[in-house]
Image (cartoon, rainbow, N blue to C red):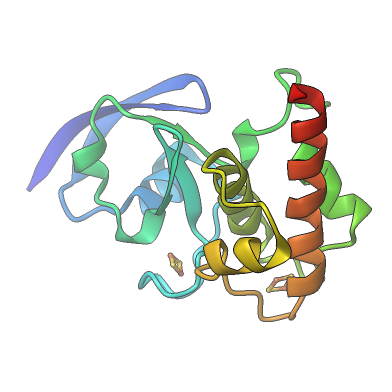
Length: 161
Ligand code: FES
Ligand code: FES
């Protein structure tokens, strides 16, 4: 059984028919054509597919696309500045801190980190580790990932203050 859906992905409307069993992850990768969101476990255990729905982080592999009719979705492709040439501060911090090796987990780590900071869960390395614990990095870059999130949180606090 299929249903019509309409979603806003990175500010652009996308409409079409989807099989009711389609995950948001498959919608993004196979229908919208945005492959920056990665499929790791496809079972909610690794965080590689993390995206923002209405500003809140979700595992796209566990989210049914049909339930998102009308929703706003942000993926890694939508984080940079409007022209795509100005990185989001957390993307820049990942580069500054050298917070990746193979990069497979990185889009999910960055989306999760953006939400972690917005949620106010980035007050200390321990807090960041706790609230990012759903994002697995098989290359073991955790120390640098936490530093990147911390760097961005500190920069944003300084800008606000
Ligand atoms: Fe979604 Fe692993 S692919 S949590
Ligand atoms: Fe390779 Fe995280 S950088 S899995």
